[in-house]
Length: 307
Image (cartoon, rainbow, N blue to C red):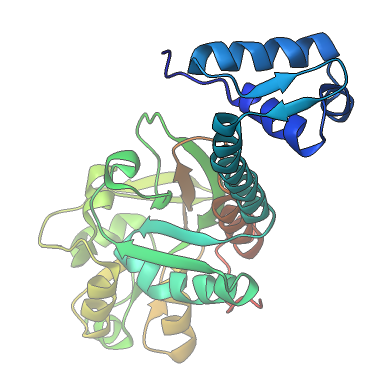
């Protein structure tokens, strides 16, 4: 017996029994009677069992057909229920989203954003991993990643959702002891606290009406955490570049001072990455859209988002 059974044939069989006739089943399914009859005959041939005794007026289940109908009808009902459940999950976001993001950004801002998302969609569960490494979304089972900076070639879908501004800052105590530079060229006589990404980019790129100045960085103090660089700057250890989501509050509180304010650093793009646009789960698409809503174009929103 061929074990590969046509699901359409099973559907036709169940419908024929429930509606008590080929004509009724054909009408309900929008099929010709000949097609319904052919599918039933093919199903019986595959099974090697007579399911229906046919007369000119009616079809009667055989004993084997009655047992088969009871089993198959339950399976078909379960399949319909599963399809309806899946459809409802696509309409109403449900299930778990696994997210990965940089440690500094996640610590400073992601908690507020994801709390707002959970308030809007309480049936969604979130699993978040903050890491500095490049996670392989597919192999490690993540739904999406947030990444700062220009992306290397990737097979994933990427969407730019914000740009993170940067500021050159130092503590009041450091500036009292060393003076404040008035031009980028004067940074060479100061202690500069750097992030590895800034070394990789060739230094700090400062722009003004006078043009572009690139300050190369030494490796006297390098840390892969902007929180650590912020703390070192607050302790009078030198000048550093911080993202606005860390610098702005420190400057407002007087803990740090923006230096060379007429010279601006290029903003850093913030991307969301995910494996594919095709058949993207509603919960994941809703989170991507939510992040886009609450990260304003051209800058990173610092306020706690409302649900």
